[in-house]
Amino acid sequence: MNIRGKKILVTGATGLVGRNLTPRLEALGADVYACGHTRAGEYNCDLRDAQQTANLFDKIIPDVVIHLAARVGGIYANMAHKEQFYLENTLINTNVVREISRQKTPYVLAMGTGCAYPKRLEGNELIEELYLDGIPEPTNDAYAYAKRNMLVHLTVCAEGYGLKYCFCIPANIYGPHDNFHPTYSHVVPGLIHKFMEARQKKLNQVVIWGTGRPRRDFLYIDDLVSALTRLLDSEITGPVNVATGEPVSINELVYKIKEITGYAGEIVYAPNYAGGQSTRLFATGKIKKLGWRPRYTLREGLMKTVDWYEHNK
Image 1 (cartoon, rainbow, N blue to C red):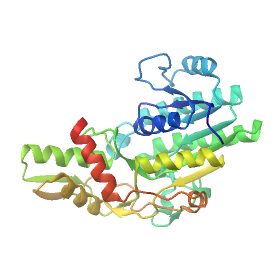
Image 2 (image 1 turned 120 degrees about the horizontal axis):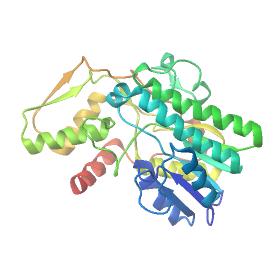
Image 3 (image 1 turned 135 degrees about the vertical axis):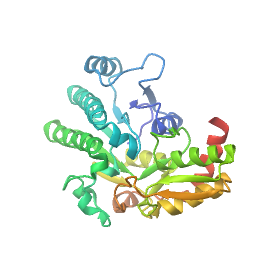
Image 4 (image 1 turned 45 degrees about the vertical axis):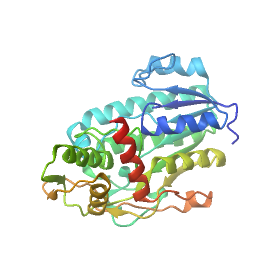
């Protein structure tokens, strides 16, 4: 798809992906309408509200929708606020896809989540066709089911009126404009905040939740942005994993961040905290067939993220 001149509605434009993707789309010549719940301006919209969502779509009538909006957080947030995560994400996704269906939007790129893969597959390769085939990990099942519901909704729209859609399933993404909240963030920004604070306060030790043994695939935001533009170019349909294909342990991640942030104290694990799935190993055949490869190593991505955090915290 040539996106030059296309009216592209980006929901969740104030989040990690939206803040990094929107400038890239504009540079490629797209007519971008950036929508965010906390964004000031004409396209501010609470997508949990059906009427506000309908008004937004009627105002824009987009050629393409990139649906990124979601209520997100790490394991603690998912476990502590399950009903809120399920309800708010279900409302957001249902309202957006309903308007896509009402206006017969030609193409949609929607953001899924790797944590919705069945728990029975942990340690095995996560193949897109198995995404709905089993119960997800209990620590984030409410969020996972809300994302799964969206995939089902998009699928029936494809059957009903020929919608072309891509359901992107990313690895653990991180980078500039992430949420570095000490309690509700994902693992990379949470650890960066923790080590930077410990260094500043000259703490003797840092406590890490869990055992450090779970393995995750960490993807720098610039690599995800390049993958998303590649997906748009190809107009590929259905679910597609976007990942490096090379998971590392949380323990390895911890020591890389410790080194990069310059923290000199001791690391202590608290194994009584939940760690989620033991391993996520994404199949990457689909995205690689489109010619995409990650550009940044984990160390390079972490260094850029820590540098951004130091200048923007």
